[in-house]
Length: 426
Image (tube, rainbow, N blue to C red):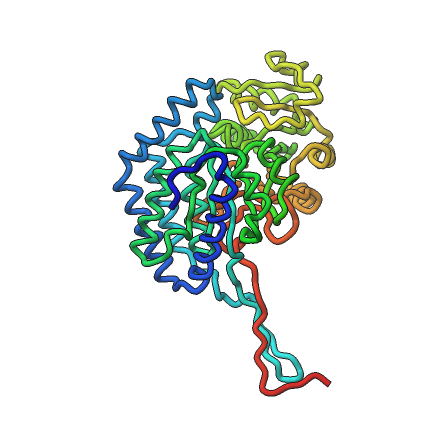
């Protein structure tokens, strides 16, 4: 692995990383499930064994981030502690426990002429993952790509540089213990932004797909400049709609959790929509619960009239991903009004309906076109780990190939195996 790189050598170094990844991908495509699982379990053990070194590396990043004035929500994303490192290791083990997708038969059928056709899963090849402050993405992305038989090139942000490298070293140790190529999971050894540009160009055709994990500016750049396919969401403008049929107690619990459990994640609620029919009875208890949790509230005219403590929302609030303890609140004309608002402002990431009326739920599910829809459950469940995928490499809001949490199955393509007995086409 290249340990350092001069700025004027970025193109050469990145090209070599791409070539190494392509070679490693060939080996991984035929690796046995036992080999891959051995590497993943060894990685998990190494993460725990190297916990002091990982925390020491993370503290270097935290000191620099605090000195730069980084916002508290982003500091939370960056920070590691013993509990979080243990969770990262557990996540790697969970991925090892998943069924191996490579070679799995998706469908099979026989043709009248005797041909037997199978559609089977295959790795995508080489995946480039570009991310910002979350060092856990190093382990999640590395493990998911390994399990799905893909080589991966990781480019973390400068904020998490030391943390990511410490975690990456554990993955390399796991690969080597299992007899798999160390270049199967590489990390870009520079914070130079030119390295990102080279990845987006495809590294001379060696990169098959790019996955960005970060803020709007990063994702916009990737979507604008990438010359290879992209799995991405631009932002998480997630909505919670409270119908007149909702249980008030349930609504309070779900809304507070959706917004405040972790405000800096893409599944955090950013807008609350409440049915006007229950504004007099439901609005104040819900907003009291949020205010008690130290959430800043910004409401439309009707909300401010009933809850004067709320600030006045403006047009920008409906399209802002706060990633902080701030929530915009609007009164709507039932489920129809909620759907109309979501259609106008949603980023098609995650939406929730709190209701007991099954017709309302079915209409919400049928007419809202977002990647993840929840009924009577927190938006913070918009996570591959919570879906039973072990972890996720990101949330995709596009409609091609992958949508929603991108786990091991979504990191595969497929090919057709056609078996004959001498047939020729007339």
